[in-house]
Length: 322
Image (cartoon, rainbow, N blue to C red):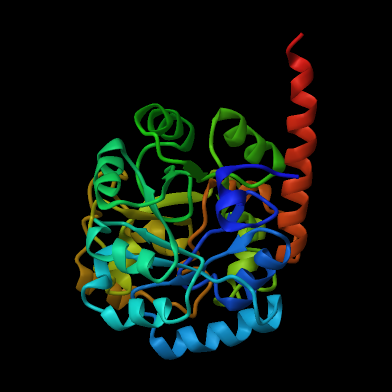
């Protein structure tokens, strides 16, 4: 039996959250993570609508049952422009809401008043201080290995720094794709982990047809931290967060930054060259755990195997101490 802040606070069996991957983590994926004993998050990205939320709720209830706990991940920087999205989420009395990428202060109390546990993904100690002041219940140290939008500090250094700097419960995200990874962050002091890239070859994900084959082909070195897909798709992400994606012909042509400064192409030029229907052009956000994903596997099987292997490793490591 797992016993961490995450499992106790959410009354779940496994210390695993399905990452709220915008455009990939809908109701079916979230439902299967929840059915496995973790808690799957629906990624309610900036472009999501209340109608889309309603549809995902129908899907997750079909996958995990009518009484399945609900969890959502929201992009804080864009919520002021789309208050109806938060309204739709809170109307469903979610068990967990993740408010990430920006100051969550204007929204935290509303989420708590709706009965939700509130967490924030953070990418630096400065982020930590901001979300602590906002009153979140826990933080997620999201390292730069993570797929999609993330920061620039690697998971292990960031996790250690955050654990030392806060009394809040800390979860980990970024590069955790096996039981070994989960065991490592739990042994370090994390109370659970977000799993993202390891689930992206599951048939329950949504997205373009080429996404899963591209991921299965990719190795861990075949990702890039870039802003070109935000430019291509007219997504006004703050430039302090680029996105980690699989390399392809489009990144070879347009990504000329170093991961710290924006690429040089104008939004007009980059977007004119983009065609999201083409496998060698369209974006597939994925993290450096891509090299660990080598087969199509149901999400429930992925989550259960990660948890079982982590448990075995943690029990075995006790023997390291005499």
